[in-house]
Amino acid sequence: HAGAVFLVDMSYLRRSNVQIDVLFTSREATYTSLQGRTAVIIDVLRATTTIAAALSRGAVAVYPVADLEAARRRAQEGDGMILGGERGGLPPEGFHAGNSPLEYTAELASDRTIVFTTTNGTLAISRALAAGASGLATGALVNAAAVSRWAVERGASLTLICAGTEERFTLEDAVGAGCIIAEVACIAPDVELTDAAVAARQLWSRYAEEPMRSFADSAHGRRLLELGFGADLRYCAAVNRLSVTPVWTGDRLVPERRA
Image (cartoon, rainbow, N blue to C red; front, side, top):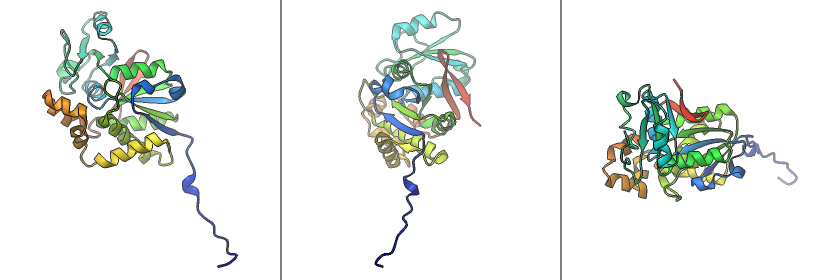
């Protein structure tokens, strides 16, 4: 009617003080992008999945080291340390274990400390720490709910850092970021998403019913299948199978367990 006044509910436009951003490669991790923010490193295939698996099976701590020779030196500093990781997807010479979540059984990992180095995941961790993140954890599909609760409880804005593969975007890490964003939204539905976070969440919605499809669609996933790691990929695709969050404390990742 002429002259009528319509009141429009604009409450949906309100934004939380907490923001989620996504960096699609670790080279984007800078002081500007991370200062004062909580960081979660994501390397679904396979570093952050393997770290969560090792801690869930009783490992005391994981020392992530970016450099191969530095990892070898670090492992010699303590008695009984396990040297694990990969280059080119396979364990380097002299390593006790590779980058497979299935290798870190309770028999191998329980009450042990692991020095861990990988091509992409541990590099992403070191970059985030160098850039001044206020807190850091690692996440993947297997512990998305646990790491999301940890991040929300910190009350700070969150940056999800995709490790990528050799400095390039990888589909599975972006999907993993989207999964964590969806879990955060269940706890804190008013959280603000950057455009990158919206994109990651949309990617997750495409693969949420069958996460293994994202591995088949990704170059890195197909490469691991060619190397015979199909069982690893099935493990990595199991959303929320673990209730542990690997949290950076001092100079290592230690488990924060969730019931």
